[in-house]
Length: 225
Image (cartoon, rainbow, N blue to C red):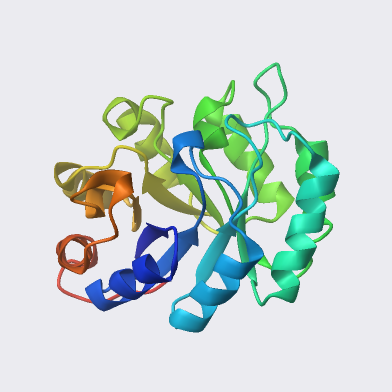
């Protein structure tokens, strides 16, 4: 499956037209992707029939600035129609902040969610994978290393072997040439952002670029997960 980062309804429309399977909705990519406004979320949900996973993150890095504020945002986003989310926190020592995750998950009962690239930045990504599974996520977005997929292939291959019930979604510096070896290793979920924006983050998602990625990821068949 192919997940595309969207910032607004225009991105959502282009991603769906290009054959994406799911959207990750964020704001402020200069900070790595933060929680979007309720109004934007509502507009995106009205624009697309694709599943939309909404980011819950309030500052750059992987520590929450205001956990109570994030819980409030989660409740407001659910009231606006969001049913799927993305989150993940680390402690200062690099281990998963399980308490912060559980506190925010208290607002998300019954929602499907992705643990994002905090895993790549954790002290032990393989141990973190097991902890995320216990938290109840269904997906982990990972590049295998803080510097991206190019550096993280050994870890990604190991994570691909550990799937079921947790799914691996590979993203973070993902390039066309990475897809075939990752699929051969057992990865079947891929995540792109700037790769489908010819004008960079200042420009919109390009449906043609999404279509190229969809064909590569689906391998001739349109799969959803």
